[in-house]
Image (cartoon, rainbow over all chains, first blue to last red):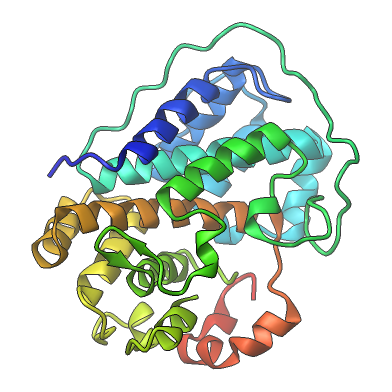
Length: 205
Length: 109
């Protein structure tokens, strides 16, 4: 079919792609693109591409992209002990955004978007102050346990990931509206899609 | 969210359709919406799911539904990769849905 999504979605995809190719908070642009490429390959069942990336990061990207329900607290703790908690959280954000963009392209009958060239520079290594506490979750995200807060350890990744998710789904404010409409699509139809995707992924939350 | 939206706005819904393709969800384009959601999760390219949905709801709605499906491919990952738990209160609230869909079998239940 080959259709275009709404302007706000295409703008967020553009921003996501630009951001992937920039130095992040804990990974360089080359590393971020390697994570993205690894996630893309894993998602379609291909072998990981030959990328210059720590093997633990490759393992994390592959699992989150292709088998998200296989994660466990012990698995995350092992990955975090090797990579660090903040780099792991940034990796989750990068994988998440690539999966969103690639899934949408595939559903719309489009080719996967080529990755841009990495931009030079060093990661900012910014730690949020105060650092979020860890309460019942596998990584620290603060006291409020909700999807928009999951990436709180890396505020830049959180903000950009949430922007893409909101553009594709709805704003957090709209979530309060059971009668919300996105064009011709009613909230009940939207949630039917959301529930069916989550069921197929065996996502309990 | 699905049942809440349907009940609050007075729309019929059969949540069993989320798990069982033979069940009619009872919302306009319901079967096609579920098929599109499933196509989002499988890796095989299946443009037909979008086409079939567009035939029923129109192309703009089909594209919007594809965006939602893509977003939940993302939501599922950030939730499962960070161990976001369902609160006890929410779990109790959703007990019937959890039972109907057999969600207690899921790895993170």
